[in-house]
Image (cartoon, rainbow over all chains, first blue to last red; front, side, top):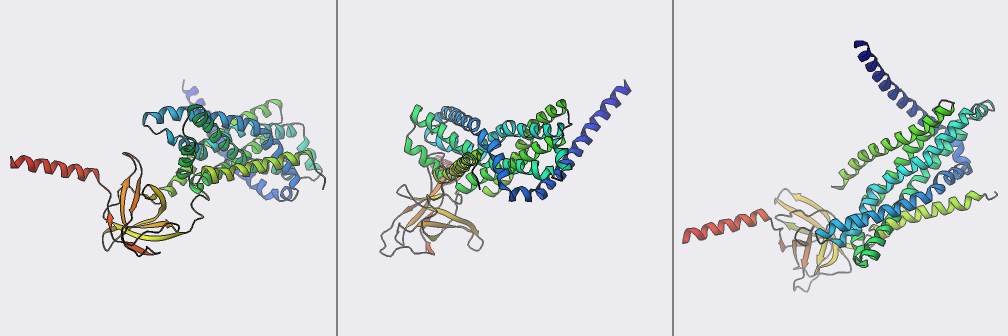
Length: 265
Length: 155
């Protein structure tokens, strides 16, 4: 009896220590990537290729999801606002919730599962098939050649994708609100423009998505680089990328929102 | 430098991304809508500003003519000092009245300007002398009850 309790306690402690250990490793890895990224920033073609794989290829899922999210917001918002006779503010509701929160967060979650997992699997497999070791032997730094371009590709893609998500969402809200339900077109846009501030709302959303981009790219490349070089290890690392990124995005969102609302009041 | 198949798509992607940001700032947000226009500043003092906020609207006859640019408390006169940034296209007489009003029953508070009859126009840095404070609902109810009680005594 006592032995099972102590065993489970020691397992719990082990897990906690492991998490701290990984956090420290990831921080060191992040600094290594930043220090080593000079070469890939000079050879921009490498980053260009990664923007294609993580950004351009995520476009379809991001834009279609944005459209649907905006349409749902339009429907749900209209239902509630109607009770207060405030249907005209539908545009404000849709635009503010997308630009401030849903755009960066949902685009981030989609990006982590669409592109982040792919990055982890790719790097993990390169490690499992000893391509990274081969590079090391040829005196090519794998962090500079493989990791840094993927990291920067993700960091650049993420704000673009979040902005496109928000734009498509506003368009979806417009389709449902104005075209299908019949909210007045002019009021829809003018209310939106008068209530959405380009700096406090739009720019803060862009800043958020940029921070999420850094977090997701760092987690995805780290998990790939750190994966045990087996089939099982790579699959576990891919799962961890999605789970850790999702939690990190939501936690970071709370912190960033708290900071941004402070300056707003 | 030779072109690769990525170049076109990545270029398109970046253009679309920046385009979306710009569209959000310009069409969804208010960048370019008001900020580019020149304004002049007028000061107004109120006993009570209620729930007025910075960047709140300034309206005359219901038309947006400016924004509240600054609110602070004057510790010598114990009054709220509100700076109004009014669009240069709109001129108001010197004896214009500024009052704090509420749009709708539950809406936001804004400053309403009612033009007076003076021939001299407001300039940058002028002070509005005629002001009307926000209506505080509790005080209104208090006065009403007090009035009712006084009526009852007379009978």
